[in-house]
Image (cartoon, helix red, strand yellow):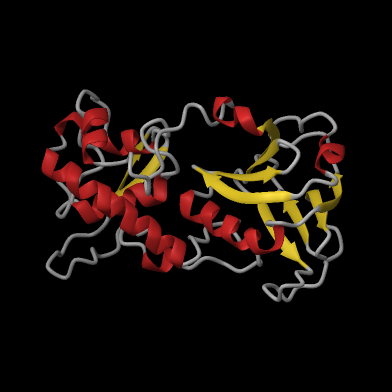
Length: 283
């Protein structure tokens, strides 16, 4: 599933075409994805101007001038693809409609945004903007990693009484929003913390290292356009490239990248997810 860098990359790719543009036609080609689409979704979207595009955790939020916000979740295989952009950001002509093009938005600037999702694990919803933070998917989220509220004091307090593995705690969206399996593995390697260590065993010094490392890893991934594993594409159809920089993720039995280490990367399964780590560098 796309994590924060992938969703941020898609959101930034969509913004030039969508921000300030009016949806002239909205086509909803099926009644549901992971959940049913909101009632009269096509009619409610048609004629709306996109005031701004933002990201919250792994969700893209399009604020509309009529008082509603379109929430977009990419799911496992969802793609938001732009075609016909008059600003010169994209060179793609409008393609013929594909089998899994479930929602298509046409804009007054000539752009078209298509939500394609073969596995149909994605989702869209329309929410009253004034009540956005009360939405069930958003109200449970913790702070964004790049926000001032995600700091050493906050994280130390949240993990101090948790007897779960630190890997599981960092994946908890109520603790920090947007982190997923790939980037938590990378962060724990860079901070020398074993993924099976209990959260309440993490020292204040290690907690202090986690905060900037999380931000550094995420920012590097965003700059690389995210990580293209399986289905992920950017809004212009291009792949992300951060997977070429992985230190541990997906590198089981490969040599540790620490030149002073002779160990090989190992994998363990935690709560049904693979954790990749160096047994020598991570304690």
